[in-house]
Length: 356
Image (cartoon, rainbow, N blue to C red; front, side):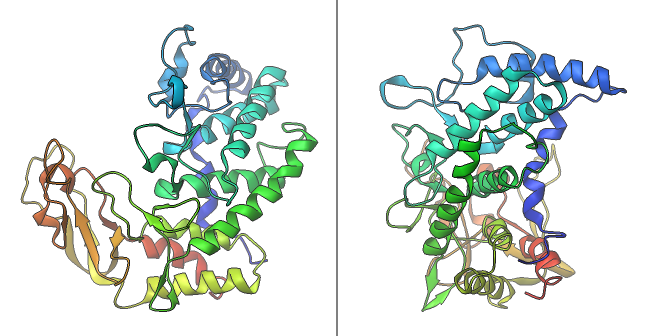
């Protein structure tokens, strides 16, 4: 096992703390958090999942009539999701409040959410964006690394297996805990099989993969099959939480080598978002900056060339499609999506410390 000090994957579970009360004393904090938890569990769907709700949704209890999910499956079933931290955040919050209060209803809701996460895993080991399957939109049913969805779930399962806060004590049953390591191992197996090979060399991962063939898949019209400079960071980081078997070590070192490849990284360059409120459509978010390194969000599958994509010309509204110059795609997509960043720096801050 490698030292885990500084591994960036663990930060993925910190978001729920922003939902906890900011009251000045512990009693007041717990009282406020119990009020939120009471309302939260009314929004939990029968399968145990949650939709990607803003925290303000849990200021009001479900009225028994409103839609609890914006997505539907066969026969109109409401879908739970792991998109945008959904279900993971609620599970962490409920576990934290149960740990401090001992109220069984919160524990039971957390257990139900964990069962949802375990049930939605494909037999091949990957996690889709939603469960049950979404109808009318295929990409949500692909294995989803996009926005770190699958890795966030696996990190939660790893915390639960180790009974790390807020999963101490009897939050989960013995039968549930017995399933955690199996689920994690299956997920790792999927990751290893899905790693993109370019000219015989292992590289990184796409934001979505086929659950059966492991092939890279696209999502929305501007999210094309690609090698992902962003999502692959935490895939590597999670693999580094595992015992470093020859297969895992090879996958990790190959991905790190890809990030360090001069053909992949863009030296003395930074990605700078257009200032909030600006309407300057001539603002180029890719700028020269001495000492900075940028990686693209998307790279061609068979080369190390970064690209951008507007909406398709057949979309409504129409877009420019795939381009190799950021300024060639329509402003709505140019400024409405993150196309680059210092992704590798986040990874190297950890990997360099452990000698990788």
